[in-house]
Length: 244
Image (tube, rainbow, N blue to C red; front, top):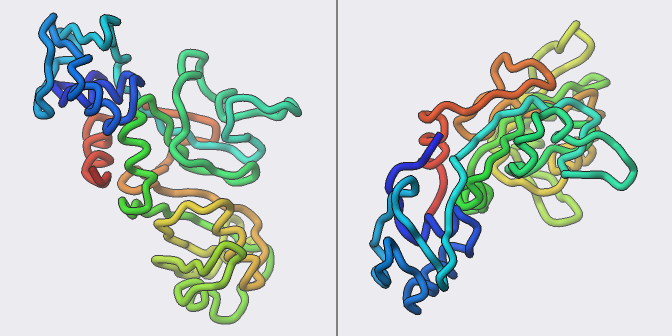
């Protein structure tokens, strides 16, 4: 997947030179050349495959855009390496994906959809609170659901770092193998272990926690431990959800 013509500051950000704002400063300072010509206009566009871009005389290039959906299994960390030797999500991926970074995270025992990419600017915008990208989860419970569970999640509970509420919550009558009730929860925040802490606050014990969707991207029938490349229309859908 390769990008089409893009704004110069976005190209610099994609290449890892600097953030978009800092890249704009580099352009204003006359430190950026495109095909040998100093460019200071913010609206300038470049072709990543053909344009020769330099900053302070050093050539800048980008790698082809890559977006991957992974079905994370329980027992894997969202990190590149672990001092204790525990497996990480990168153990589920080919070696050439080691440079991708995960968009948000799932905790050690959680499972489900995890996106990885080398398009850092879009990933950061998707994770910014102002984008309000919803994440949908399926939560299997050990015991019968506490009375009024869905209502309490919607109304909100108090956590150690402030109040938290679900955007949507509904209780299904059974679960996988009828082992217990299942709750469907949608959040747009991304606080650390937020759903686990919310469930604990209402007295519900979690059997499993599975992310089913991140914005417009669905886990679907992707098997545990498997991955797939996102289609161009899926990446475009993510672009449409991110704030500038």
